[in-house]
Length: 102
Image (cartoon, rainbow, N blue to C red; front, side, top):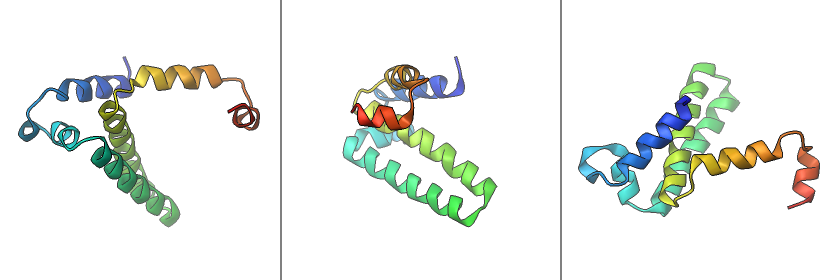
């Protein structure tokens, strides 16, 4: 099990936790819309650091983006495995071709 899989499992376990017990439980208790909003905020922060060229700050923001993406997915009951399976299915297919077929 890799880091993202472990994190996704932990996030899933927090779904039933009391909101005051963890940040993840708190976010999830606020609903999918708030989880999506937080993901968007973190994505913008990562973009800013990418433009600025601060590698350490970008690395930290990228970690936040991945965490908040997993929280957002959990809020809508989308399993990481589903996302990974879709990425696996796209392997070897040109991005240009894949977009044409959507």
